[in-house]
Length: 233
Length: 219
Image (tube, rainbow over all chains, first blue to last red; front, side):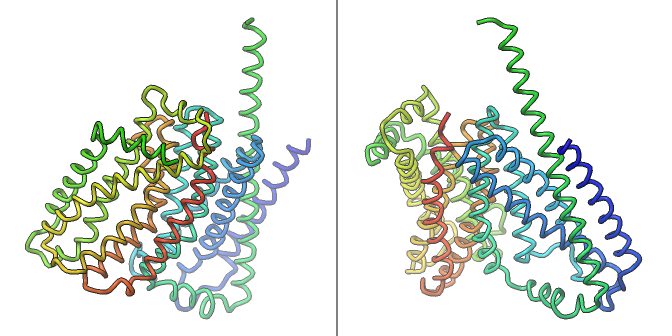
């Protein structure tokens, strides 16, 4: 029952807050004077970016825990978090250029944050492929955990390297976030609701994905048990 | 550990497979990339560090892949794992072997690179040596770990570059940037930021690789 309840409660929370966030973004929040209507995508872009980091952070944590404890629980969590993190990372990479084209005049710049996000995406795409291509479940779990740890150790270095490589645009982003952007309390409220909505979405997707993985493990276990029972010797 | 390294080196002395293929691939990469840039163009000098590093990376991926493919034949890896040595030592020996092969290949490809790109034979070229060396160590540190993994997966030839290339982005950026500065006649002290980055990357991933290698090779 509690499993059902978790699914239901998280789903309901996500639905309500997401609807509220969408309504606020389109109907409630005032249009940014400098950037115009396109600035509204910011309320989805930024929460998605934060949730990407939360999800990938969770991958690193669960990977380390898996190598330490060796329980399937941590592996399932790492796998689920990687998939959900990929989804949010993709959202960030899609919403970013939509905003950047009218504001910066280009879809893409090799700015430190953009580049780091793209490399993150590539690392975790490889992570998911590695899981698919590994020989069996145990190998997949161990290899993925190794990559999960190495990847998370690598991210700060990548960020530093990319930052030194190109240091043009972060300043633009900082002024946008700090000074000009969110002076209006209605904007802050909208961003807050968006954050809650995205956090709930992350939690819900993680829950559902994790449950699916648990059921898959369960089916596999029963399958093995049946084989053992019906094929003697 | 030294015995393990010696074993790999001896195999190489007898077959010369890895070194020959690294060398040829490095040379061919130089050739192909030379076609990509107009020989008369001003851009050519600017492209030189990029070409050098692409050659390093391509040859490196191939060489590192080979280092575990040979172990796979006749279940040699099983034998290695049965040896009463620490898994970390196997890792360090493999990294050392890979670095030695790549350095050896670069020792020949490097001068040819200078020759093709008509670089001035000054100390500037010699200053490339520590940069390339640090880059190769970092590349081998991450590469060896993931070669042990990718050799056990399906589609293993493609898996290693997929895993390795995004992870070694700092090495690539640091290497290209530092090489470009040095080739422009700047002293090494001018690129110490990048050298520190490469050094930090190498140290960090040698330790991480040494720690987690046992999970990458166990059955």
